[in-house]
Image (cartoon, rainbow, N blue to C red; front, side, top):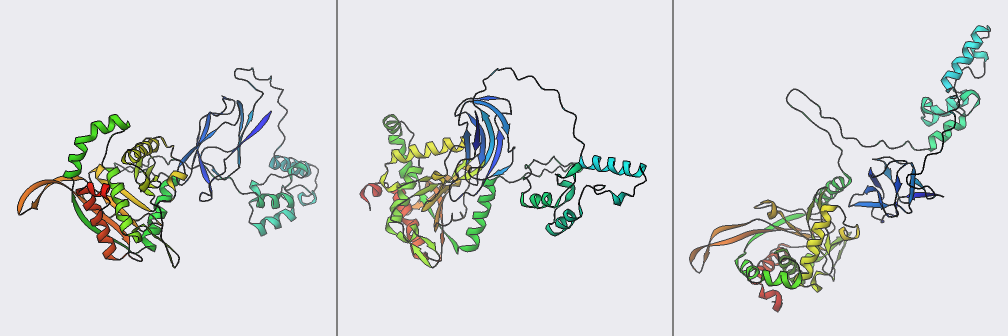
Length: 413
């Protein structure tokens, strides 16, 4: 039985996908649920499993093709089995003459018979009505297969060709261009990179982005972590990091200043009564931002487990579209790469984003004395259309205070 392999139903926010690379070739046997090909959207890479076991008899769409929901990309013969001998090939029939060859044969016969070429109805491969239709519709008749006698191109052939979209060429990595000792290579952007670029430009052009800065003394949090990290890992099976505290500190600040957790929708301000915190994670395909839902209701251990899971699956390209959608506030940690200071760009339609940076020992003044403390610069970019400087600064101070005195998170101070 032949069954069709179709592109799964894509979410409303995703209109199309790109076929990355077939894992099997035509004639290969596949098991049920075995991954046939990866589909790249502008958010994630999805695996397309085989709906049934059998032989992949036909691949309709090749690597690099653009596809939409429910489009047929291959067929599987479920009655064929692995290792089954291929049926004996029937003698190949003589190839049919091409339209050009047929036209040439007729024209040659007419010439030998002394008949003028224009007296032969099919001395040319394109009929007059087809030529006119091609001119009107902008169709190249040299690429149209004729269905008329002797391969003549008829008007209906041109009309049908105009209705059928040309297949999208597979994106290819351009070869390295050698220009003396200055090589260059042109590579097509992935869908994810295109989407990231689009959203960043959108954010810069539609929001009134400002950034406020502060610095936080990490010593209290580092002491707390060092004191309990072994017990924490033994009890919860996950390492205690700093990000879970920053997530909790962000929620603490957002509760005090709800406008920072809001978003703009046309001429309206939408206040969110929930706290979905996006955590930026690096992956081989680029930066992705999975979302921790209802972060206010989660413990530090639950947040750490989600972050660890997100990081692992981001490297494997297995984050779902749902996990990358939404979010009311984002935290990005450039400090893991050594960044000392940055101005993060808001992830629309959110209105603010927190940037963490590298922790470095610096001289600071405490109680009139100069001491060395592990300090981190914090940066919060915000949409000045709805967030005033007061709320932006005070919300960042609330995050700083919570990190410098973690007991505030327990006492909700």
